[in-house]
Structures are given as C-alpha cells and as structure tokens.
Length: 324
Picture 1: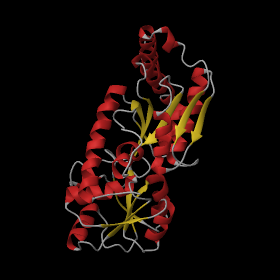
Picture 2: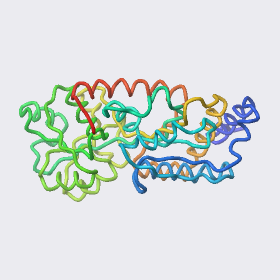
Picture 3: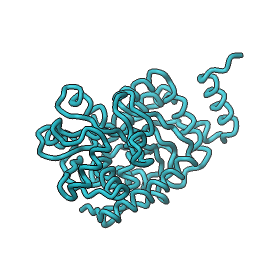
Picture 4: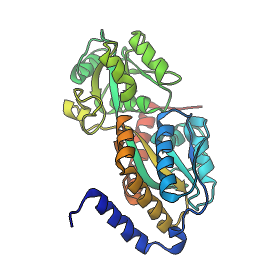
C-alpha cells in the first residue's frame, strides 16, 4: 500500500486511540469552549475560529469561540486557569499573553508554567520590518549600520507595550547592540499609518498587513523574522539570511487547557488537532493568512514555552519593560 501523509496521520491517530482510556475516547460528549483574549477579527481569533470549525466537524459537538478581552489577553487565560481540567474549556493565545504579559505586569493572576497545560502550538506568524521609502536604509545590514551610527535617534513603532513588534525590536536592541527608541500605539493600523506618514522610523508589521503597502510603494521591506522566507514575501530575506545572527521571532498561537488535565486527554486533543489542521482546505486558509503551521507535541510545546519565558524575561529585564 502506498503510504501517504493522510494515511500516516490516520495510523497515528488510530495508534493513539488504542492507548487512550475510555473517558478520553468519549471526549467530548458536550459543547467545548475556546476562549480568546482578543477582539473578533484579529489574528488569534481567526486561528481559533478555523480550529473550532474543524473540530466541530470531527467531534460532532458544538465548539464555541468566546472573546474575553483585557489585560493583554490575561483575562482570557485567567478564565481558563480557573476552569475544570476536563478539556471543555480551552485557550487559544499568542505568546504575548503567556510568555510576556505575566512578566511585565506588576501582578499576574497565573504562572504560565504551572497553571496551564500546553497542548500544541497551532501557528507561527513571522513579521516584516517596514520603513518609509525615504528611510536611509534598504537592507537589514544598512539598517543596523544606520541605527548604530545614530543611537537614540531611530524610532520603532509597535501596537502596544509587550506586543510582538515591541518585543522583537527590544530583542534586536539587546542582542545586536542597538539603541532604537520605542513608540507604542493602540494597535497595528495607527502604527502603520505613521510609518507611511514618515512620523516614526520602522515597524515590525504582520506580513499580510504590511505587504500590500510595500507592493503599492508606500513602504519598503527590509527583512522578515521567520526561519525561512515567507511565501507572502518571497523576495524579502530573513534576519538569519542577513548574517546578523540566528534571530527568529514570530507571533505564535498556542492551544492550552488548565493545569491538571489527564495526559491521555491532552494526547487525544492534540491528535485530533493535528488531524484537522492537516486537512488541505484548513491548512491553505491558515497559510494564506501568513501563518506557518507548527502543531508540535505537548512535551515539545512545554519545553518551548519554558525557553520563550526565559528568552523574553531577559529582554524585559534588559529593557526594563513595565505595563500598568
């Protein structure tokens, strides 16, 4: 028999099911809720709704997406932390709410490494460094040289304190010896508008948001932050390609449950998510949105989350980042 990706996934799921206790195999037998900490229409909400629709078909149960905004997504995470560890309340969240926010707020309602069960990273979305066409650098190497020659004069925009663009810019400051100045905005769109208006220097934008302006000649792209080039920006090199170091960042969305979930239940949810996100139509929609598929195992996710908490903790300390 010819082994295809589809049959391989099916074999994996069958193997997993054979070792899962009856209570986990029966899951779910009632509606499941996925909590999101950001407004409808955003990137995290988009990923959560695609996942919910796909799981609804697989499980034969309603899978609802509930928006609970506030505190950089921490209110949503807190709701899941306080829920029963039975798999019926899950969280889809970007790393900013889990690995960053608890470290920049004076009081956090949860410990991301103790109070949540990491199930899998769903997607990772690299960013695009954009500038006004008149900015005196057209490559990442030129950008680094210009910022170093003008310490404290180059500004970088972001959609807010602790956001992926903010943290990535501070990471560059720390690792590459730069002194660029952060200018926070209330969201990505006003930040993009001021970069296009030449009111602020640069911005790490979401690729789907930034590329249309690059293609229209209103912005220029200097570099992307992924491990490899984005299919939405194939002509734009990565930081890794530039030779500036092995710096890879992205806005990644993970799937979590509360602490204390049975390992067999975690494995079942992971296997089902892996199956539905591997479907062609679902995968194509996510890739078209600028996301790279990840879907790593629960142990892999747990180790990666620990590394991310450590990485961003160092950046937060170096830049003395605080939020109120």
